[in-house]
Image (cartoon, rainbow, N blue to C red; front, top):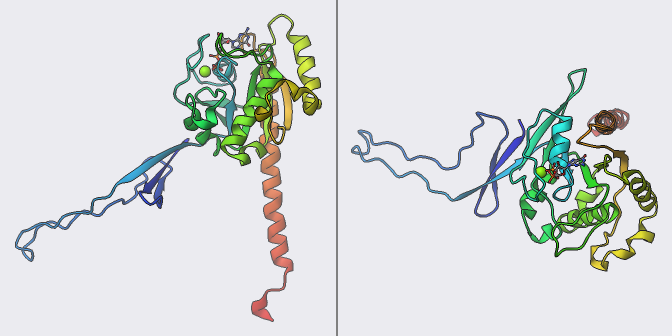
Length: 279
Ligand SMILES: Nc1nc2c(ncn2[C@@H]2O[C@H](COP(=O)(O)OP(=O)(O)O)[C@@H](O)[C@H]2O)c(=O)[nH]1
Ligand SMILES: [Mg+2]
């Protein structure tokens, strides 16, 4: 199950949530029917205005500008069949792919409507996209190794600039998003000059302050993203796809192991502390 629906009233009070098919939440009570005691006069039920907030839950969320190859990547990695086209905004609704592993482990990846510059102020599908990011465990940044230009009127952005702009959009929407564990996928490695461009990107990522000069000041993130893995791939030729799947797994396993360790430590701590009840 990958959806979570929050039922919220007009005062932003959460009435309940629906996580699995069949879940029920009572929003308003119906009136009692007519009976002998009420002279067969039924009473009115409650009326309530509510808001339904739909949130996706996936292990990883793809973060990338249109045309970076997110849909192609999802297809190459998983069983999903998203729309792919060489124009922006093909993905208008979230799409989830499942990565399958030999030991039957499954990891879900959500491809969300294309993030564009200004998404935090709700340009494009901005907020719809960013809202879903809050629930994913980790982020999978996707950039075109050769950079991109959204439209002839907008500026050309290198892969490095794309990474910083994506980070800035996340930061402006919700700063905590930037502290999520993240991996960087450098896509379209089959293109000519990709190798040189990748090397350049890696150097720039080592020293982001030095290379952020080209960005307008308000587009430089407060904190640079640190990536657990930078993985070059080609969604077209499948170069690097298996390696990427391994890195994703490793990164999620690492967090799961840390979480388990933290729980164990907490329990140990609780055992060591003298319980006041017995003093
Ligand atoms: N050369 C090359 N083209 C790619 C690759 N991955 C995606 N594309 C192309 O880039 C365009 C955008 O891809 P799409 O997956 O729709 O990008 P999205 O907007 O990020 O979902 C399409 O024309 C794809 O065929 C790749 O690895 N190499
Ligand atoms: Mg797409």
